Image (cartoon, rainbow, N blue to C red; front, side, top):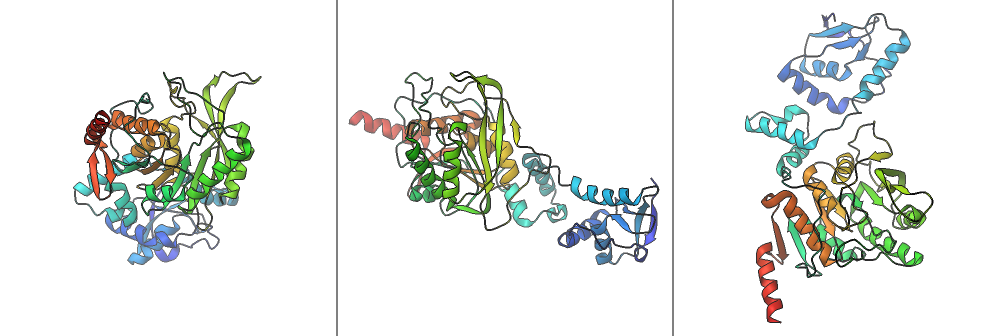
Length: 416
């Protein structure tokens, strides 16, 4: 590739450049000053810029007299136009791995390097570096058995590392407000009861709460829960609501009544069928996706994602029959929740959202109505992350270690 040094006045910006780049000029100028010109500006045979408008503006801001240039010879006018668009568009097709990004940034921070030169805003850097994800020491998809006598009690608010778990009612606005503690949710990711009267395969055949309602009661139940969640979802915040296809109309109506406008329906395709009594055996589960009105929505996933989600099903999920793989929830968080952001799940279930959030460096806020499943979430977090995610009961201004809570409540039970 031939590269020549040209005076900046020779280059002609393309007046119809569809990519708005003024916001990036300062960052690019700082990068050029620190690292120098490592990529030439590409022009056509008429000296019109094809690739590198922002670099040219950065060079002008720095007062550079010359810039490196490559002339794209032999391209048709149509190819030049398409190349200009493709160069901008292909940059949007990839997404950050926040865990690896945080590790790279931490190395630079330890070397006292100016992180502002990476192009990230200060708030984004603080979020990425504030609390690195805990390493999993157990299988993230493994779910403990629900206990016969739970430690968790209705009303308990647990701190699980950076996360919060409330044993409460998703339909009560006060409970949603309590678990969020004044923070808005960046994304709503939840897997409500499917209203199919499912009993799990545990020893006591644990029945999922609110899973056997009349159609009207089920829809109103969802309206109440989704409305309470919607009131704390920031403008532009995304939502993912899983549901059984047989109740798709009820869930869509509930979402609309709650003020959640559905934009797409995603489908998780399972690697194997779920044996049932119907003619066609189920091998998928749908999920409503959209975002709250009022601001541009957050999308971090590039442009190559599709509505079909293909992830292996957890090998064992008897304790929660519709349990999703952690990797699936992690992918959704990576797409719609900023690093360090808050994800609300008002139907905590077995805690998949919490595990996925920890691995992704996000903060989960869970509500679970059943104390037994509350214990499942706590035990799963401990089994997956160990001491890296300490569990404490929040009692007013006090924080009580989990072991102390267990000892105290066992003593109370023995004395009763």
